[in-house]
Amino acid sequence: MDGLVSATLRQPALPRFMCHLYQRLQQQRLNLVTGAGISIDAGVPNWFELLRRLAQTPSALAGDYEAHKTAGLTPEYLGQIIYNRRRNPEEDKYNASEEATMNHDWAASIHEAIYKDVPNNVADLITKHPYLSQLKELAKKIPFVINFNFDDILAQAISYNPTKDAQGRSFSVEWRPALLDRPNHTTIYHVNGLLPQVSLKKRSPKLIFTEDSFADAMARAPGVSAEYIFMRFVQNTMLIVGHSLADASLKNYLRLNRDKSPANHHYMIHWIETESSLSPERQSDIFNANLDLYNVFTIFLTSAEMSSFFSTLNLGNRDFADKLEGVGQDRRSRWHYYIVGPVAAGKSSLLEHLRCFDTHEEWTRQPPSEMYRSFKTLSKDEVEKVDKFIYGELKEKNSRMHIAGIGFHFMDRGPLDLYAFSQNKEENKNKTAAMKDIITRQRAWQDGEIIFLEAKGITLVSRNYSRGRSPEQAGEESYLDTQTIALKEIYKPTFILNTEDQTPGQIAKRVVRKVLLRDYNPTNLTEVMERHA
Image (cartoon, one colour):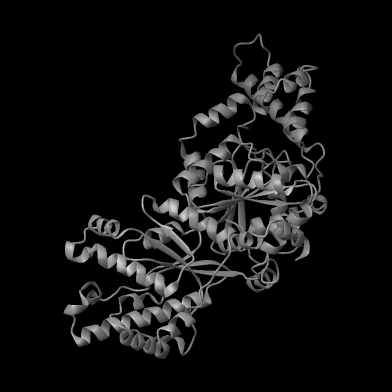
């Protein structure tokens, strides 16, 4: 698989990560978060080199910069010192014209320091960059890019189009949060301000560069911009590129997402110079720390592997599936899961927290009113009406699981749950015959792994009461315990979660990490059905 073969050997879960990212890309729920690493590969200096260049400008720091740096001052603090040296310390006030002139000169110095070694020709820039050509094509497919850099290198690359873009997708560069998303449009939002390479292009009025500007930005955090970005992190899957997680605001958004939306995980590419730059132990340390602290899956890639990574995400559905199904231990591009458990175990609540994947509700259409009555009170015609609805739903849900695309697919309830409500073996045989006639004569059951949820019978009864069900509707503790045992006997699940004293978010986080990091063990549902024939 091009440059990803060795990366997959180092990280067996990489194909699953890529399938999830591709799934979110198709759903238009993948966003990019870009940092300095992308720009450094284009010739932009890193933070400390940028500050060193600024410190050499007239009236800046002379020989004191290295001493301050050695003292361990943060880049923002060093930037503040350099900025203050450029101002006349004896002047308390500046008129509007003087202030504007000074800020213009400051921005011009930053511009010169940033772009000193960056090619002026966009074509040369793209050619020399190890993965910008592939990244720009991915960015064109993504609705929102959060850019922490001042430079407009990514925007230049996207706009460079020697051949007409068949998609006809538009894009814009902003330093203020857009009020509305536009269809078929990519927005590049520069969080810390924008300083384009071409001076005649509009730049942002402010650059968050110094300690005071950074503090001002943090003080404004409860405002529109912070809320706007936070909702992006909660509702979408972020692919973080060119970051070392040193940015305090980025870490804050990730922690907020971890706490508010525990099941929603993001991805970060951790650049490594060579395949052996980090030992397996160090990679594991970084991976586990980022996962625990930020709900971030870390992908360790060299520059060449990043190029292959982005190229693969840019493939069409068929080509992507062909590649992923030929690599790694899984050798697949689709994963299916059925959420099973007794009434009130938390199936629907879990499904609600798994919207970062593809989810299928318990019913595809509104059930008839007879479904909510005791079967003992139904007439023969009413029973037939309910049966027709249930088997029709099972057929439709099985069809949807079969045609599900690349990625991960979760369904509320397993298709063979109805065996748990049978009174005897004869009833099971009748249900099997009906399913074979209506459903599996055309298409076999789609196999999938069972995610089994359970709780004590008394807890399930209590949950039913809290949902407003009457004592007759809530069920008895012994009945619900028996239902749990019956469902386990049907599916014989290996992944069982006890939902006692755990929130749906906590359960969902465990499910996500199991799905993306652990073995996939699908149940052969046709064999299960045959056991009940």
